Structures are given as C-alpha cells and as structure tokens.
Image (cartoon, rainbow, N blue to C red):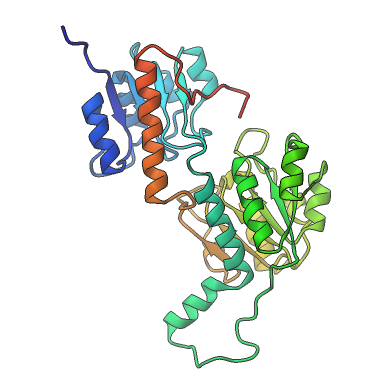
Length: 328
C-alpha cells in the first residue's frame, strides 16, 4: 500500500534542481512562469495545500490564513525572514512555520560590504558616467569619494549577518561598533574587536557608516525614524540589506535630497517593489532590487532546507528550522 504524497504548493519558481526533487518527493504544484500570487490565489492555495512554500513576496496574513483548509499543517518558507507570515494566527490554527536560516549569511554580508564600498566610492555614479558617453578622461578632482579605511561602522543587529559583516569590515580597516537587542558574548566581541553601544541614539551620532542588519518585527518598524536619522553626521552613509520597513524611507529620501547625510545604499524598500520616485532621482543613493542573497549557491541551499523541513515534518518529526514566535 502506498502512502499518499502531501500536496505541496510552491508560490514562486525555485531553482530547477529543487523543483525536480520537490516533484520526486511530494505531490508538488509549482509556479512555472513565476507570476506572484495575489491574495485570491494565496487563499485558494491555503484551502487546498498540505504544505505551503511561500516567499517574501507573499503576504500570509490573518485574512489569508482564515481560509486555511484542515490539511494545511506546515508553512515552509523559502527564505530566512518571515515577517510576511502572521505567526500568531498560524500558531492558533495549529500550523507550523519554518524558514531557511544560516545559508544566506555570507551572501548578504558580501552585498552589504559591496554597498558600503559603492556608496563611499561613488561606484554607481561612475558607471553611469561611462554609459552616458560624457566621460572625458581622468581628472584630479573627478568623482571624489571617501576612504573607508579608518572609519567607524555601526552595525544595527549583531546576529549572523551582522557578525559576518563585521569580519569583512575588519579587513577593510573599519572599526566595528554595534547595537543589538542583547549584547553578544564577550568572546564574539573580542574576536570582532567590536564595541557595544547600549544606546542606539549615541551610536548613530558617532559612526561614519550605519548598516541595518536586524529583522523586521513590530518592535523594529521605523526603528531608524526621522528623529534618529537626524542624529547621523553629514558625512555618514546608511546601508540597508535587511528590510525596508526598518527605515523611515520618506525621511531618508528628504535627508539625502538635502545632503543632510552623504549617501545611502539600499537593497530593500519600505513599500517594495514600489520605490519612492524621488529616491530614484538621487545620485547619492545606490539602489538594488532586493538581491542581497541572490546567488545560485544560496538559492539552492535555501531550497534544500525547505525540502528537509517538509520531509522531516511529513515523517512526523519536528522540522530543524521551526520558527518559534517571540524568538526572532
């Protein structure tokens, strides 16, 4: 007698190797053309699925989960951040939620370091100058940026990605400062030669570069508010590869436009995929399409974690990457 395979509905197109394995293991319904699901499509999915595999583009809120069928027992998120899933409602309905931690750490830290360099050295502006055909050759005052060696980096959120960034920053001669919900272990501080600031306000006022690396939760929404952004020094730059909602984007745009801070490197946006049109016009902002974790290796690793979480759950065990509400 064969056991019926669980119906797994995947909301976006995943790497081919992962989709192949998904079809071998489960009754998988894939999104071949990668069209993002609207709310009505998500509702239909939760009505039918045994397992839902969403991504950051899918808002699995209480209104969607209210339609969840009796068979939906697992939401195996393809990604580390799960702020798009209503964890409280999922728990109340007896639905387990998993994510894919660890595998994106190095890729995101690489991109964060790349944005720090790009903003400081005006890489985007220089590339656009070449493409415009207006470059007339080298000049002693052409495209002057700022040296990062010897500057102070303030990391907001010293988790896996924050620590990976700190290791890279040391190699570039940056001194590492950080603010975190909890102070990290003294051994980690010593390894990273990192200075802890209990007061976020004070850290912001004393660093040259700010990197946002904390998760988006109700407590971190607009953590970098208009008031806090005004604490930054005029030569400071801000980089965000975490979540756009952590920064007051309208206030940041105004400050960049008025040259109240020197620049920003943003891989995420408060209302993405919509981006403030005024932000797009600014030369002192480097803007990327949420690609901080976009490596082939990272995406395959994410998919493998999703497969393991589903298989473990289906076999009757606690999946290794179960998300516990309140421990993010």
